[in-house]
Image (cartoon, protein in one colour):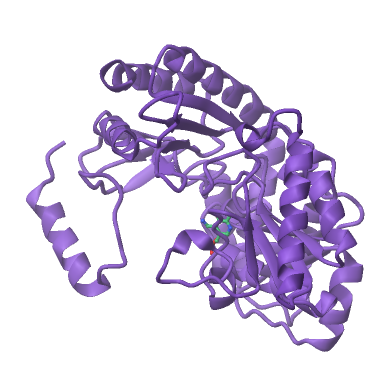
Length: 428
Ligand code: PMP
């Protein structure tokens, strides 16, 4: 679609007032005025298939969420210093989706705030400072969290207390070894290096989908070995479920559950309120109680009535619409279709993922696996021109990132695969 003059003018004014940090996706940027399910509609009434946005998990403008938020807005919005049933009810419901050991909830407004609090608690509990994350991880925007978010690049330095390890990419495992042994050795090596530089370990933090590393969800099971090493060194394990939580990976509500481990701290955000800013941190009480007794943590908006109403409505829809099962079924069909379409392509190194999170790694050559960023950009933009929205990820920006609202249904899968096949014919 050609860019109308009006949109060009808005983009020019946008750069004028917001500055260069506010980038847009797609060569031909797009504007939306409404949405429903996994669909977005532009000003001319054109329907786009949203295969990218994870925040509106139960669907854009879901009527049950809209109704719950509207009702709460017309009643009252108060903070956590007043008693409110709805907050307690929500905390009980959310915690019921966790193993019994994880029994305390703090509420904040963004994934970054959740990770910031998680790390403060980890530091307080361990009295240590060392942090381990994966090589191309993203955990958020506060100064502390940015210091352990290597994706932010050279302009945003990593802390001297931060060490990077491989993501769980089975292709990195030496012949004769296992992914568990490889990941254990990665963690052990990072702990040794921290100690050599005078840092004891505070925490290992991993994104349950390794989204920015390039999406590595399978095989599962190696996490236990990593957490064992962390605990031996006196650290805690923080599972960042901002991407992988709320049934995104299909098989369970939380990514860590697929590995059969119980983290010390879990953080979550994005889909939690279907678009209202609400995030959470779930703790083992033995990790968080001392912090709670000694450090005042009051978050003005975190846990206030309106975002909590949205979050509770999301859980209602999860139950009413059997969301997790749908994710599993539609995700499996989506991945199978994509594998079929790309099987013969010399430029597709791998189709991977779980539930409604799929990564397609595009390379110049299947043998060398040299990333092909330009090809990924072409595919993403060709899809956009056919009104299907995805984006890219990984250090080489060469992994197609397909991560629709969880409301993505069987008809959406069919439309996605048909459109993808057309683009693949030209490009892959
Ligand atoms: N952790 C992960 C894994 C994320 O993907 C993000 C956001 N992309 C964050 C944390 C930060 O969340 P927010 O943008 O809500 O601060």
